[in-house]
Length: 52
Image (tube, rainbow, N blue to C red; front, side, top):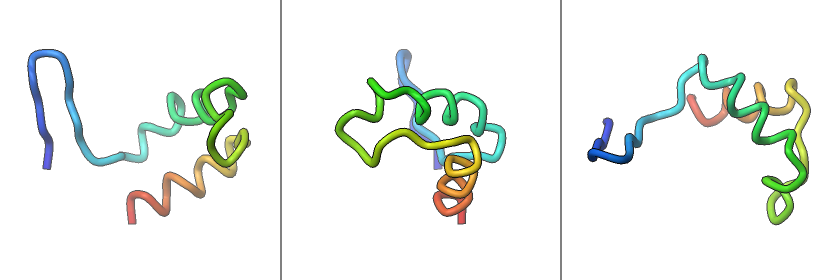
């Protein structure tokens, strides 16, 4: 399901989201209050779990 407004689109994660997600999850400022920074491999595993 996708929800869309004039300023926002919410949709399920897809495999092609790996690049922007890996960039965010490798950023210490972005991940400061979360699980800590992730490598690309960790992000890919995380994304796979979200999709399944």
